[in-house]
View 1 (cartoon, helix red, strand yellow):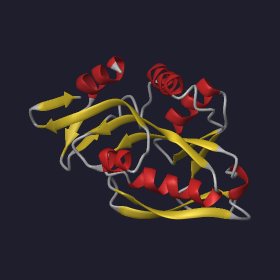
View 2 (cartoon, one colour; view 1 turned 180 degrees about the vertical axis):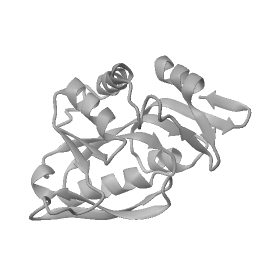
View 3 (cartoon, helix red, strand yellow; view 1 turned 60 degrees about the horizontal axis):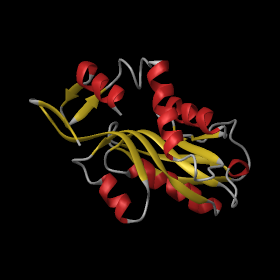
View 4 (cartoon, one colour; view 1 turned 45 degrees about the horizontal axis):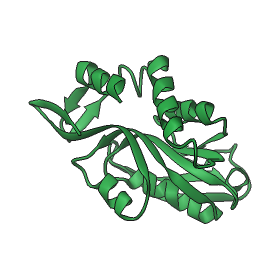
Amino acid sequence: MKALEERILSEGKILPGPVLKVSSFLNHQMDPDLIMEIGAEIGERFKDEEVTKILTIESSGIAIALAVGAALHVPVIFAKKHRTSNVSGEVYQTMVHSYTHNVDYTVVVESEFLKPDDNVLLVDDFLANGKALEGLMELVAQSGGRIAGAGIAIEKGFQDGGSNLKAKGLRIESMAVIDKMDENGIIFR
């Protein structure tokens, strides 16, 4: 997606790790027009999959997931990183490791929101090592639902998460895939 690639090149910052900081337009300060464009494109790519729910993980994926939900006219669920007092009843839960924060989270979704007849589209802002998507896949598996695929804003193609998940049969549609990222710049696929 050209508009996203252009914003990454003009405003993205490469940090050690390698971490791509896109806080000025995607996951701290958000550009609503760009996010809606990303959502529309992901929605277009999955329009024939009969998606019934969108599932993401808090917090940076929520805006993109909402944009996809608006494009497909389906509800959006976000897995909470902590079981709070307003999460009641039966839940699906799994452990997810955050590469960015180097911490493990027990993520939860109330079981009333994911059902065996759901066809779920997973959505997130980044795909690097694939742990967040694996966690979301586990939540859908616990519900007995199906997975339509995954819509991702930015995939770090130089890390193995995307290739490992594709090898397991997951359809992944990434709006920007970075093949190389270092002090010399960014190269897209």
